[in-house]
Length: 614
Image (cartoon, rainbow, N blue to C red; front, top):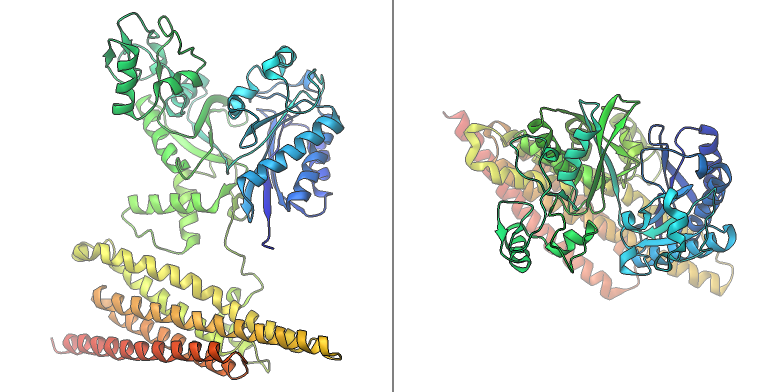
């Protein structure tokens, strides 16, 4: 069965008392099968976001332990803070990470909710993907009224909790449990202490927008008079259009601005059955974006506090650039931004590419360069340190202690020892990776140069292909050794009985096929690296033609080395049909690679001869 990994991100209504927070995190870490990733405490908001991951059952157990501990050490009757909250454990979402679906995470939320209600006597509401009814999907709707309004809310039959008693737990409040896609908690910091200015920007950004106002000419939108609907006059909140009927304005909003007016009004608690006399609302800039403004005394600055509920639709760097524009219009400056909790690897990669493109540089560079570009460009270390290894979830596997993480001299020494692995297969993969890396270098030396403007698109395509191949082939350096070791482990299996001998033989045959599959892919990827290096030599900066040529030659070694490692392992495989298929693939690949090697070499020699004869 595939590995299942779930992330849990409970938010606790305590950000100041370290002993209370330690009690909560100790409860999490005492649960086998989970790993605590991050504890982000906010003294000013008096709130802490905790992130941990683990197997489904373990995560549910750890979450229950944390909620029980929070109910014991936090007293909501004495709590105050800038962030909206309903209970000691305010919200507890499950997030799919690997091998598990959102609906399966919703089932985990229901399991946890039932236990919290039954075992701890805390009212529980379900939200997002676990919601019991559509009107409870939105976190803000469920949390409306906060702790102070909870007793009255519990008396309303429409707000009977999904689990637990329909009466106030005075010290613990209520807990909201659900399942959602990855949420990025993202704050944009301004060079002002004025919370109202931060709020003015937040309302422009967030999906639910704000009350529409008359134009005053002032940069701060909040200073105009609020518009209302009148008989025969139904203004659009996002432009000067005024429809003679509400239906006409609805059609205009869809056609001109791309949003459903009724949905916008409903999100702002407007009764759409009778809109005359009600406020007009202006849609915000971004979907899946929630935002408020607040002042953080620790930083002596105001922030736009943002939750991005689907970063693939609305990524943080796009919101940041809009915030920078809105701030400048108001005479403000964005000093930086911060990630609260963790951020997906893909989100920062996308941001790094965005800023490198904006700078006129190639976005197809090593992943670490992209991450650092994002950190610097977004000012993520403005108010607190930003450590990539601690803040980014989903980073490529750490190569520390692996062949790929060795210094060159140490790898050479390791290969030279009297052990069969690492051997030719790993070195073939390394040759292919170096060939792809040289192709990327040539392409990136070509990109952005005025004299090669007509080659811009080709250079970027080469760099993108080369970076992908280089990453794959670097991983194959260790994969080849691991594949060989799997075969050797099978050979060491016991063989005293018939059953043991049969199991050993089956494991050896499977190990041999793995020991064939890995170098076969190395050979094929190295052939692709030969192609991209050939393209780099042909279309790249002429001053780097030999770098492309060396790349092609190195990748050729990867092809030939990979094929040789396939062939030597085929001799012991009993499946003759499999052997015949793999031999045919090797013959075809070597023929293509040889032709490409000769063609590329002749082309480079001709270029060098032409340069020498000028």
